[in-house]
Length: 281
Length: 224
Image 1 (cartoon, each protein chain N blue to C red):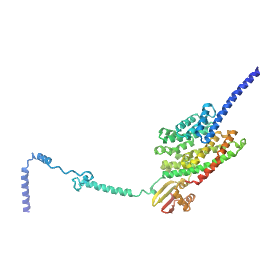
Image 2 (image 1 turned 45 degrees about the horizontal axis):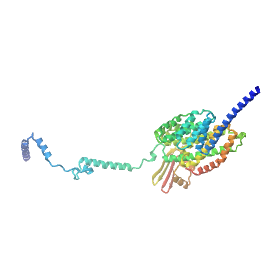
Image 3 (image 1 turned 90 degrees about the vertical axis):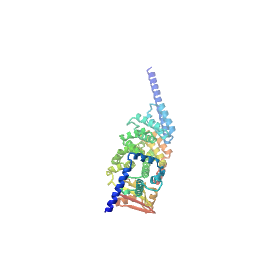
Image 4 (image 1 turned 90 degrees about the horizontal axis):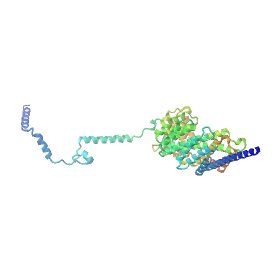
């Protein structure tokens, strides 16, 4: 009798375990299928798989990544920006900070900023708050991204709110690419603020690069930017002038070296009525 | 002198006679009647000409002549002010650059960063593809996980420029890489063997490394 009881108990446990295992396998299978579809950018089909997973297995351990990737699928689809915004918001409310899926958290925040920016540009003023609140986020990637994104807003009263974060990046960030990005954003939003930034910590001497292109006596290009952006600025000279520079035997590195050596002297390239002047102040 | 004094007294006598002949009480009424009975004045010339030739004849009134002179002088001053070249750039202070230039500089920066992102991703993906599931080295080591996370952060800053039409092809590859890194960083060291094989075959089947190489070449050749 006792043996029978044990056999029944083991059988019951086995059945329960098998059921649970089958469920795990099924939700994992759905998730794997969805991931392959996402990799192939088949957003609609992937979204359907993820929604099945969330509906059939609401307690699945894959619920958090499924919520995240569902939001991603919506974000990639045209005219689903509102739904995507809500979906990311729901994911951020659900996800456990510090858990296995916390790496998705940062991505969700950044995607939310992108969506808020797009909706604001289409006239939804209320979405601006979603970007502005992230200017104070303790995670620097999110904070920086919010500032960079805000700098693209045409209304200077709004984009100007990114200036403190952008100045902070130029002054404190160690990554030179991020510093350059912040300098360019400041140049777009508030060039005066860029002048006020103490840049000397990373550069030997804060100097100004001047580039002028004159065509038939008229100024075609007139630029006054930090020396730190010299390399980028010279690459961004219009194609026509770059061809002239190359034809005269110069390249960007050579120009930068010459200017760095000569200090403030003018490098002047004359070619068929056009004059290119580059110097440091 | 006597003749002058005599002529003056003659005028005085005539004035006294004339003043005595005036009926001072009836005079205002007589003046009003004569004014009303007088012929109407010729109509003023209309328009601008009317300002200067109110009677229809070319006669300048002092006020209008003054206004005309003022207008001419003002126009001359404006002509010379506007004709003067814009203030020399050398006199401008602070940084400045045109929006077109800023856009080009941003594109150039995105091009370089995308190249850098693709090269670093390539190394990480090659390491992962060449590893054998089950071996100790096949697991994502913490350093590789960290590199994947760094590349994920880098990709976020690139998104704005990648959305532009000039970087369309690079965006497609960068998005696929981002998805792989997102999964690798999510699973970290606990990557099961089956998952490793699945991701490896995903990379091989999609010819991801070959596509990365092609986009790299394209970006190298397309400076701003």
